[in-house]
Amino acid sequence: MAMDKSVLHPAGAGDPAAGHGSEAAAAGDAWRGTGPLKGRSAGRLPGTLRQLLPPLAAFVAAAGGWEIIVKGLGIPPYILPKPSDIVEAGLANRSGLWVSVTTTMTEAIAGFLLSILFGVAGAILLASSKWIEKSVYPYAVILQTIPIVAIAPIIVIWFGAGLNAIVIIAFLIGFFPMLSNTLIGLNSTDHNMKNLFYLYNASPLQTMWRLRIPAALPYIVAGLKISCTLAVIGAIVGEYIAGIGGGQGGLGYAITVAASRLQTPYLFACGLSASLLGIGFFLLVNLFSRWMLSSWHESEMRTEN
Image 1 (cartoon, rainbow, N blue to C red):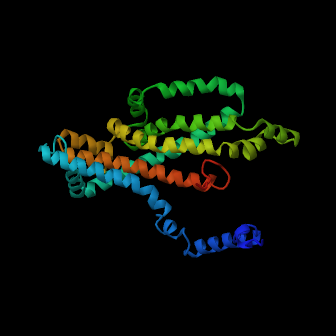
Image 2: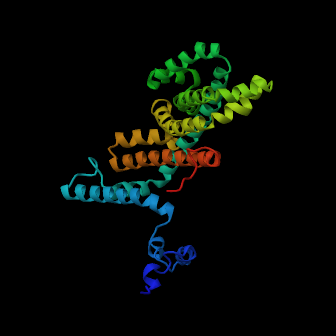
């Protein structure tokens, strides 16, 4: 009895070409946006928006809850201001607030650049000789453990009140992370690569410049991310101790004046401005990190999910 071949061999079951043809057609439909993947790809948000949406939603929820709770409980603004009170105080004093922000930003940038210069140079010097590292590095650790408020009066005596002392204080706070991270990176160079440079009769300077410093770049960038935010903190702390008043005072001076006058909304506005300044510094350093490392280091390379 003759059997129906369509039962034994369904369409595409025994024919590889038919199976590949159907897969190619489905892929083509998906590429053109007419296949089953159309709805999923069309409803997907851009990558940047997907990253920003959760923190923005959390911020709106927190600010909204803060506004509703404070307003409902009737808490006076000098005790706990509402977010709307903080915004109004910042706008009402925007000219003075902008001057304070620019002053603190200038001091923080100067201290940050000094910490990069002396931190990286000091780490290179320590990494060039184990004897120097063992002799000097413990004193760098001791300097870091001393509270800055304890040595700030000495800095004021030596350098005078004002910009010089504030920059030195910001530098001291951001110096050790740069020194420590760079030194770790320089000492973490692959020994096989160092042996290869030795076989090719490379000088210590060539080995340092062409091998050890490039290999330490991820660690240097990590130190930059820590030091940039500490520089803002150091500048504000320096303004508390060695700052000058008047119309050119920084955020530390503005915070002191606002606290003494019980201008709590403006006090919150100054604190928020300092936080935004530190975030801005960190984002700039993060962009620099991506520019430096995204083409070769796994910490910044984009991976497919």
